[in-house]
Amino acid sequence: MEFSKKSQVFETLISAIFLLELLRPNVAEFRAVGLATSTITFRALNCRKHSAVLTDFGGIGDGKTSNTKAFEAAIMNLSQVAPDGGAQLIVPPGKWLTGSFNLTSHFTLFVHKDAVILGSQDESEWPPVALLPSYGRGRDAPSGRLSSLIFGTNLTDVVITGNNGTIDGQGSYWWKLFRDNKMTVTRPYMIEIMYSKQVQISNLTLVNSPSWNVHPIYSSDIIIQHLTVFAPVDSPNTDGIDPDSCTNTRIEDSFIVSGDDCIAVKSGWDEYGIKFNMPTKQLVIRRFACISPSSATIALGSEMSGGIEDVRVEDVTAINTESGVRIKTGVGRGAYVKDVYVRNMTLNTMKYVFWMTGDYGSHPDAEFDQNAFPVIKGINYRDIVADNVTQSAQLDGIGKHPFTDICISNVNIKLAAKPKGVQWNCSDVQGVTNRVSPEPCNLLPRKEIDCPVAKDRLPIEDVQLKTCSISGNF
Image 1 (spheres, rainbow, N blue to C red):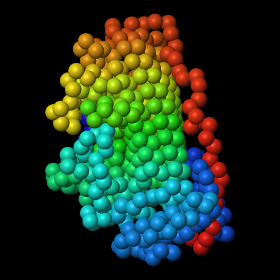
Image 2 (cartoon, rainbow, N blue to C red):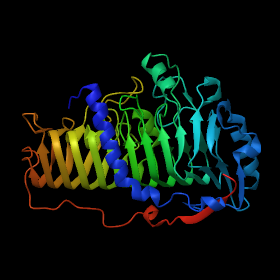
Image 3 (cartoon, rainbow, N blue to C red):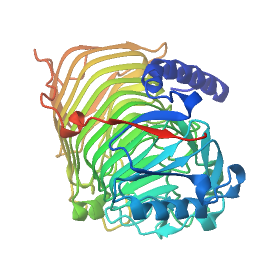
Image 4 (cartoon, rainbow, N blue to C red):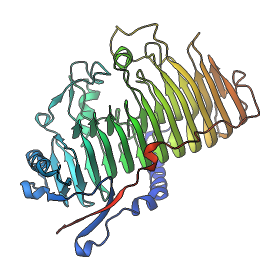
C-alpha cells in the first residue's frame, strides 16, 4: 500500500474524524456534568474518601514551570491517607509540565477535561528504572531504560482517568534522538504499571508519547477503556496499548492513531521471557478502532516468549492500516500463541487482512536458543468484511514447526484497484476455511464449519465500575 506523504496524511485525518465520530457516544457517556455547580461525575473501580488538587502542593499550570515536585509531594501526602478509604489527586485546568512521577495504591489520578499534563523535555526529570526481567535489556539500547511519565509498581486499586483530559508526552524530542541514533537508554513510555492488580486507565486523550503509550506489565485485573490515542503515523514505536505478561485484561471503546501497532500483546523476549515464564492470558479487546498505515491493528508478539493464550477480539474497525490481527514470532521466541478468537472486524484500505510471520527476527542478544520454536495453534477468525485490500493473506509458519489449527470462516474481501497477483501466500501452515473470498490457499482447504468463539466470560468482563464524583472550583 503506497501513498504520497500528503495523501497519506489527508486520508489519515479523514479516517480519524470518521472513527472519532463513531466512538463519540461512548466518550460522551462519561463527560463532566453539572459544571455549573463545580461537580464532575465519573466511573471508577472505587470512589475515594480523600481528595486534593495539584495546586494545593504548589502546582503551576503555565506550561513552563516544572511540576514534578508538586506531583511527588501530592502523591506522597495522599498515600498517607489512601489506606483510609482511598485518595484522589485532581489535575485542574491548565498546562502542567512534569517529569516522571510514581503513583500509589488505593489512588485515583483525575485529569480535568481542560487540563494537559505535558511531558518534560529535560532528561534529568526522567530517572532510570531497572530493566524488565522478561526482556533482559532495553528495547532502544541495551544498557538501561527511563521511567515512564506516569509510573507505578506493586500497586493495588489504582485509577488513571478524567473527563477526557489530555496527557501530552511531547515525544518529538525523543523521536529525534532515536532517529539520530543518540539514545543510550530506552525512551520512556507514557504510562507504565508493573506488578499491580485492580488497574483502570480510562477517559483520557494521550498524544505524542515518546514511545509506547500504555504498558501494563506483570499485572492483573486491568480495565482500559475510552482512550483516544494520537501519534504521527511515522513516529517510531508509538504503540497504543501493550498488555505484557498480564492476566484478566479488558480493553474496549478506544480509538488509536499510531506509528506502530495500535495494540501489541506481549510477554517477554527470547531467553529472558522463557525464563521469566509469565504469559498474557484472559484478554478481551472489543469495540476498538485503529489507524496505522505501517503496522497492525492488533499484533500478537513479537515479544511473546512467556506465551499468549485465551485472547478474544470482537467488533473492531481499522482504516488505512497495514494488517488486521497479526501474529509475529520467530525461532528463539519459544512459548506459544494459542486459543485466539477474532470476530466481527470491519477493515478498509489494508495491505493485508491476515498476516502471520514466523521469521520476525529481532533478538535481545546472540544468546537466544535456536531450538526454541514457538507453538502457534488454535487461531480462529470469523465474520470479517474488508474493502480496498492489496493482499488477502501472507501466512508464513516455520519449517518443520508449522502453525496449526487455523480456522477462517465467513470472510468477504474486496480487492484494491491494483492488488497483488497471489492473494493467499501460504507456507508451513495448517487449517481450514469456509465461505471465504477470494479463494484461500491449498494449505487451508474448505470445510463446512463455523470457526469457534469463546463461550464463557472472563472475570474482568463482569467487573462493574462505580459512579464517583469530585467537587471544587475548576
